[in-house]
Image (tube, rainbow, N blue to C red; front, side, top):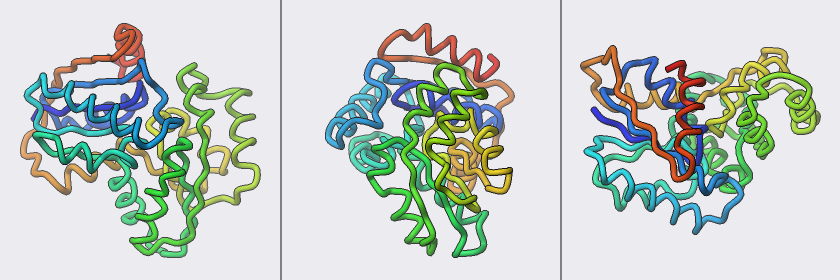
Length: 247
């Protein structure tokens, strides 16, 4: 299969990393809308418009499946994309919820959802968690993590201060949903802040679990062809991909 992965910027590369590790696809075409990142501070209609424009981009390729690695897009524009797409479109919200459901046997488990302002405002995670019987849910907009990750500050004083700013009033949760694809890169730091007592739900691993359950992957690919595209400065995207994916 050939899969298209769409993100508002570079964060979706963490999903690509999981896809590569599990050898699911023969080719991955990645598109980051780097000229208009971040989506997490934009209104619903703008997010939908940008997402449908990205869908037009993928029509240039013989794509079998599209993954919207952006949580904000998954929360606001998934149904509109599915209505206009020529193939299946998978978001990251539902897989994250199902991963949490599979891991948490206690319906009273405390779940903390981290995401951009738009993702948190959508209520998408809370609504689906409630639908699956989890009502002890808190959400925290943690948008400052995005530029921190893009600066490569995966540890250190700036990250520690920002975590304290966001988490100082939170008790240790049973699970933390990393509702932005940038956040797995600081998962170790977040886990450490909560004394390694919280289960971390990673969009990339959740997507793999969801795909393997939904589709019949009878073949694994030892080598995956990669193509990277960006709406602005594609060389910068490729440089980050080389670093994050160890290409």
